[in-house]
Amino acid sequence: MTDRTYVGLWATADGHVRHELLPNGRYDEARGTRESAYQGRYEITGDHIEYWDDTGFTADGDFIDGVLHHGGMVLYRQEAPPTAR
Image (cartoon, rainbow, N blue to C red; front, side, top):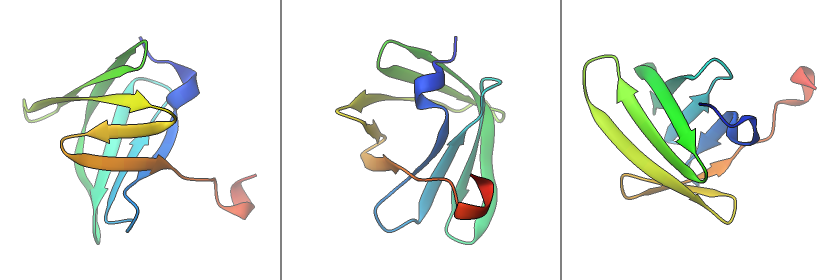
């Protein structure tokens, strides 16, 4: 199940780690200059997210007060670029 409330781009404050949660239940994670460093599927139940990387790695996180806490990282929702609006 994907909660459309959380679909979109999430990034650490420095922008190094970026998670794009896609509406089809897939995600694409970039790290630094490495685009699509990790890809897989995700499911959201309430405010909890579970990740299954295509390589078999699993992880999870929680949305707390509009912020994604995942693997010791804090990711913030990013606004869409002006051209995408």
